[in-house]
Length: 336
Image (cartoon, rainbow, N blue to C red; front, top):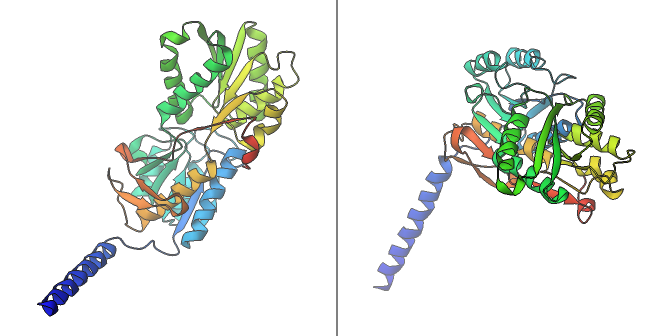
């Protein structure tokens, strides 16, 4: 009887082992030597530099050959030539932060038809232009959180404005839509959105637009700039203005850009995520697609290195995580 028990136990253990082996065999390893192009909105934007650095780090971990290319401006058609080059070079995957939701679609469809895997990050195209979209955080959550933070900073009263990037930026426009929805709630009845200005993700243009807002709206109490270029340029203007500390500026920025403005009282609080993690996650997602670990269907899962396990959501969206609020109490804990 004892021998029979041992035999059953051994057979059970063998069955479990074989089962695990089959399960592991069904998930292919990431292909070595994948060729991946990272194409940010524009090449010199500090946020994009950090974002793509995460992509390069992930590529090194998985043994992929990755490169960063891109235009010097964030125009709607400025990324086209780089997509065409990636097609000609037969890249396995293209990771794109899109400057326009629709202008790039014909070129992206041609890339996909040739077998290239398309992943967008940060700023999406229309869904037919890619397989996966890596979203920094839930778009509704980002938009609403920005208004909620400014509401606290202004005591829920006064004129407010938005200093955005380009008029066609998909992510900016989606966040602004949710900001406007949040402002409809009763607690914001004394807050009035008077202007949406566009700095085109250019430092000097954003600086000038911030100056224009201050001059045009004497009752302005707060500004949301959901772009790292805009918030730092706006803070630079306010830091030497008599309205420093009186007009509340918040938005999306990096700790290294905003540290001096937080410490000198120009900005009380702002939000972001780690942009390097966006690029890192996008590269693992692209590699999983190119290696046929996933196809982009809702519910599929894959491992993204140090970030752990992620699940493909509706319409191919993968959310990195919620935004984080930086202020004087915590900003020195971060270096990016």
